[in-house]
Image (cartoon, rainbow, N blue to C red; front, side):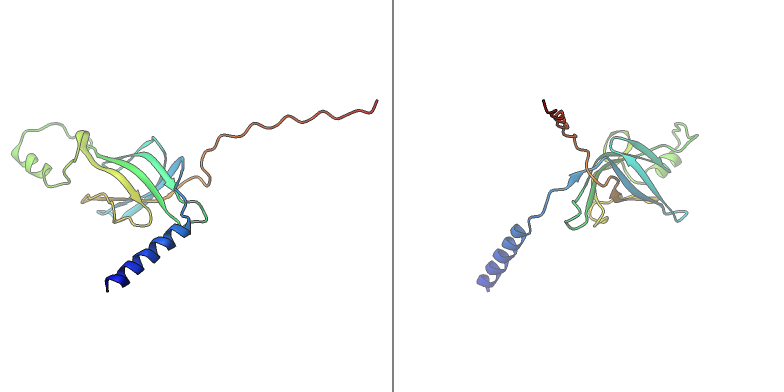
Length: 164
């Protein structure tokens, strides 16, 4: 039985090595889908890497986005930071009821109301997901079709040769 398992693992390792999977390529933007669970409305939103956008009471910052080359299995991955914002018009209050109500929602994992910081994958949104009672956010794809590349300088054209 152990020989069979070793043989199977060795065969799988050789098959993966022979497949020649390419690395993910960087992209300049990401397309996200955000769902408001209360109203049932979903919205597709696009952002560039480094940009912060707002959806409801969430602020989403895109730190990086990578996509597999066209010849590989489709995959997009984005590094996101998602912060909770305070509701508009609400000031500081010290009532016990507000304190209890505040602790029912998602608890920040970092400073400034950080709720999520990590990679989200388009092919498996449940693998690394935002856990929020009101909103869902997941990656659809990276925006550009080719990564930003430096253009190679063009070779100067040779002047035409005139007969003497």
